[in-house]
Length: 173
Image (tube, rainbow, N blue to C red):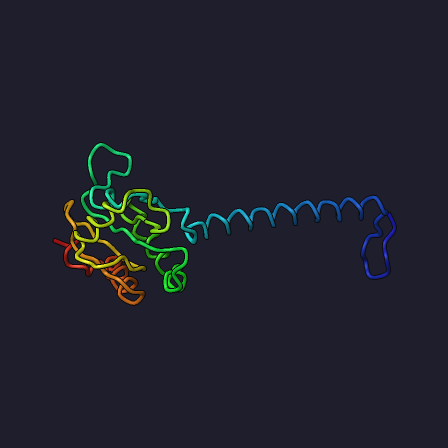
């Protein structure tokens, strides 16, 4: 094989073509790997990633598929048409993702898709001592009993951050 004046070896067309094809194949594999990692890292950013509660009756006695009701958990109520819910969605889901790392603790309820009766809604509103259902809303259940309700974007995010930081008193007792 001949060399250029500066010491580089001359390559035939087949060797150059082989290197180009290998470079393209490696680039495609790298892009697929990056896309897979990105998808896995951002999966928590959608409502579908979380367990959904579909009935008002199930909010205070949620079993998550088991035989016994969970004792401590948080339910975030939102609506697809709620502007405030959309504005805080990423913050709420980021915190919810960190709360669910060790156990099922954070659940969602889309009020637009609840399937039970108006009577169940009325009972739910009586339990939380609210006149109407407003979103965004956080329901906190401690020791299997309703503990608190918080509505509004600021309160919802602040309470979730407090729970995440371990400074929410009712869950620390």
